[in-house]
Amino acid sequence: MDIEAAFSALRGRSQALIILPSPMTWTLSERVAELTIKYRLPGASMAPEFAEAGGLLSYGPQREEAIDRCAVLVSQVLRGAKPGDLPLERPTKLWLIINLKTAKAFGLTVPESVLVSADRVIR
Image (cartoon, rainbow, N blue to C red; front, side, top):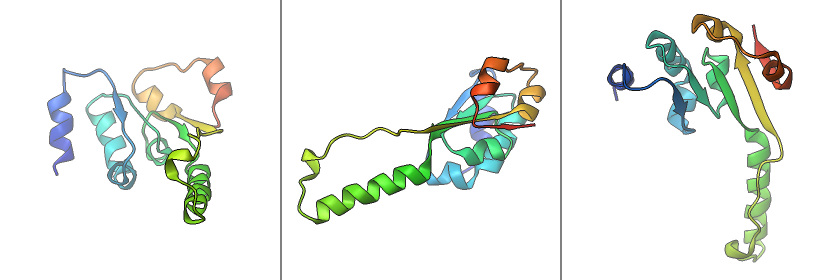
């Protein structure tokens, strides 16, 4: 797959990107972050690796919490619970990671009210 061709095709058609979570976007976080800067498309992802690799921001559930909760649900099913009877669960903790280096590269100013609510700010 030619990721750069996809970014090139977005030129002039999009103003920003939401990068959906998948094993591919996790493993290619650095390349995707690099291309968002090259093609001037600020991006947000649920994966913290994206902001850590140079993307503008990451906002989403703590993966470890989601895995732990999944294990609990699997355990209940293995003990005989019907999957349809289990309650729908939502994450209790969402991480916000803001990359100020990238914001500066885009000429964006992140409001102080957003910075103070961030779990991590990359300067």
